[in-house]
Structure formats: C-alpha cells, structure tokens
Image (cartoon, rainbow, N blue to C red):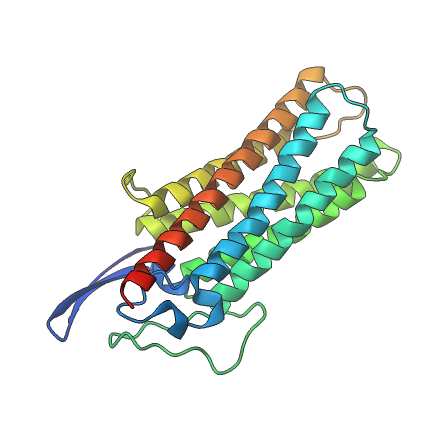
Length: 274
C-alpha cells in the first residue's frame, strides 16, 4: 500500500483489492464521493450527494447575504446601518448551519477499510473528536469560526457606544472567526493536496478548496482592516474591509456552486452504475 499525506496525516492511499487498483482520498471518502462500487443509497445519509448539495446550499445562501451586506455598505442606499447589520447577521445563520452539517459529516464518516466496506459508527456524534483526521480538524475549526461570526454580526446590530467596547464585542469575534476560517481553509487545501502545496487545476476538488481558501484570505484581510480606532478612521479602510468581505463572499459562493456540481456528478455517476 502506498500512502501520502502531510504533517503526519494520511490523506491518500493507493492499494490493490481483489486484483483491482484502488485509490482512496480522505476528502472523497468522508464526503461519500468515492463509494468504490457501492451505490450512493447504501451510504449513510450524511455521505450522500443530496446531503453534500444541501450543505453547500446553506453556504451559498450565507455567501449571497454577506455579499449583499458588503455591497450595501459600499454604495448609497436607503437602509440604515442597523438594517445592513441585520443582513450580515442573517447571512451568518446559514453559514453556521452549513458548518455544523459539514462537521457532523466529518465526525461520523466511516473509518478507512481496505475492503471498502467501512461501516458507519454505532453512535452519532454531533461534533465528535477525531484529531487524527485532517478533514475533521478543518470542519470543526470552520464551525467554531461560524459561531464567532454569529456573535460578531449580532453585536453589530446595536453596537455599544465607545470604540474600545466595539472592538471587544464586534472586531474581536470577527477576527477570531476569520483566523479560524483561514486555518480551516488551509487544512482543507492540504487534505486535498496531500501536501502543503499543490497545483492541480484539472481537478474539481482542487478548485473547490482553492477558491474556498482564497475566500478565507479575503475574510482575513477584511477583518484586519475593520478595526475600530480611537477616533476617526480613514475612509479607505472601510472601503477595503467591505470590498474584501464581498470578494470573500463571492469566493465562498463559487466554492459552494462547485460543490453542488461535484455532488450532481457523483449522483449521476451512481445512477449510471445501477
């Protein structure tokens, strides 16, 4: 058996089974994208194409709302700052739902088995504890980050008076969420790359994690420039923060659409093999 991975994590296995060449990839395995001859209907609910597509749908909705909030913050419109903040908070909810569903999938994914008949875990774990899995580390980090954005966007609806208090209640949770997103995005990239870096533009999964990572970078720069200083801030800081927030949302939206496309391809392939 040939194995590959990064930092002690195994994310790729190449082996023979009954005279057949089998290539196992960690991301595809936990998402049910590599059933190795099994029908999609034989997989647990959380590893089926419909689950992956629905999960991506929540991320797509959250992304659109974040893009809308950022656009409303950049251009003149009749909405008040409070109403725009509500748009951002509304966007954080589907992000959190998608983040939970993704982590639930990773927490309850079947274990690797050379025979290809890995069975679901007997007990379902809402969050789980699988530190040996790069995919689980990525999803749990992202899920916690979405919760941080819940606090960040909710506190912005009726901000406390005073720059220091606003930084503590709004900027700090946003910064924490952005850091966790960036960590999560790079972990997902390493899981798919089977290393610290890769260039595989012919692979759909590579595009998904790469575009997602780019969105995490934009969210990080948006969070840094959203710091509330003691006194007036240069106008360009707000423009940069909201522009990068819009770009980050656009990247997440594209990654979600690519994930839905990936799920449809797997579903179609499974039907053709029935």
